Image 1 (cartoon, helix red, strand yellow):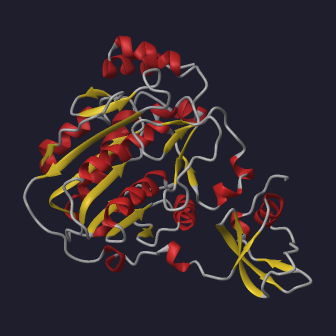
Image 2 (cartoon, helix red, strand yellow; image 1 turned 90 degrees about the horizontal axis):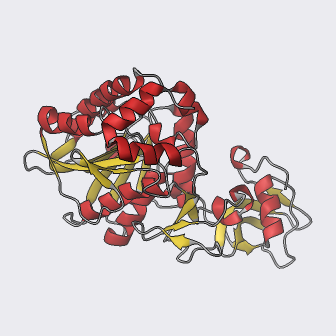
Length: 379
């Protein structure tokens, strides 16, 4: 199933004993987890769910439901996120302890939006609306997914852009940059057979070289004394420990000590979540402080012409519907609303959560849910 070169590199990177545990786990079924949107939902709606210890809003599910057929999923009440990826949010919350209101943050490689929404929830809980979070995705097809996920998360302090890292210039705009860089994807082998097929012995070093170009390009936008959170979903030392050392030596930064990182294991100057030692997939994370002491200048939303998807959502009178009607609405079907529903433009809601707009004409209701977001499967 796995190439010998991958196995050898895994043993070299995490040690033979841990490599054996990882390889066994990669042949087993993956876990399922979600992270709540605390601005919309405070109690997990899934029976028997167990908390993810390193995330205040994360839960392991007993089984994988059909998320597409849950209106709360479409309302942005939770995000389906792999539990090991939530460790990046745990590190981010530690870093926030030394920050002040008005903080400016960038998620550099943000699609599909899991870490963006995790960061936004932490910023909102700590600073209210006194923060700016810019989510960037250079690939236009992935940017559309990011923008949709940010829109339904519904936090108007998140702006989205699609720019190459080299286009952000040299103005120090950010207090924190999260760089969850494109990588060889070894940590996702269990969930992504394509990643297994695409892996080759040259890929880790190729990805590490690309990462260095990305970080070199964005480094001037992080203020002196600002924090870089570096993460990957891979195992090898080229992209993980070696790259962190390169950041220290070549870009100029000091590794920050992190606490309460179990069950992640220390590898180099970062921490690794290893399948078999954790229920989830592979993730590596480290935090570094840029040398010097400086301040941010400029509003990133204005400087980089960001879209603010949540701010574009119109506000119409709410009309509560049952689950069946909600699913037909999300499917794009014609609706018949309750007789007491107001005429004109309304917001279709399920369990108090907004799904989207419709136009009630009385005898019928025009479904205005975006065609690109409609449920494609039979309901």
